[in-house]
Length: 343
Image (cartoon, rainbow, N blue to C red):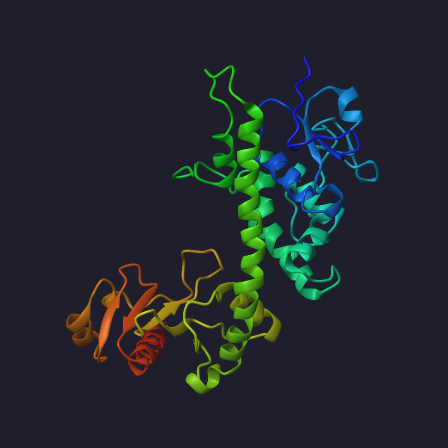
């Protein structure tokens, strides 16, 4: 029997309809439905959950069911054996080759308009394009990959992650021994959660990530005033998201040698020296703080390093602290010199 439900409080015969499948739901169609509802055309759309082809035929847009990918007809399924589309084949001739799910398909075709609306910017604005790319790379692509069963890497993982967005969505499905549970209620709860995180991600880039670029660029361009090596930068404002911008600016400005350390003040106005990772998401550093300093604190570290006012160096060697700017800078400079002696 066909299972159809409406998410609208007052369904009307002239209401636009978004079709998706009934039964167990997943993060990709949850996000696809939420994103479509961000468009004025589908803002009040009724969500119809069914696998009945005749009912799906009455829907204005269909996601994750129906066996058809045809943007001209607003059909966005990815389960066909012949389907192998990615952002690089459909929209962006860039690095994203992950097979699209229904979330990726909707984002690919409507995402820029959605992002522009949330940012309150024109679709053609360069910032819209930047945020559109970042949200795919750091939000939607993960959902595409998980839904399509694509591993992050080869080999057996050392541990499993069960708190990603796709996993949390699965918990809104009825339990196996709840045959009379309200499936649609769980779908709507999941859509509220996924939608909130999607909006938060876009607004993060607008309110925090983009303004940080100016600060990072200023620090990068002024690095020679900090140390002649050019491998240390100082941020005037602590806590700003700097990694993505630093790597992008190094590439844009053709910086060589690459930057090794960043200095900034923490919330207690103490100074930190942090190692630049090998890549934005890496746990490996371009140059860790000296091994002899790691795990030491206060006077013991001060005596060992010969640098006044030391607070700590983390046992992992990726960050250290000092009470003064001069002390933190000396920790970074000394680390560079020690590494040169060891090569």
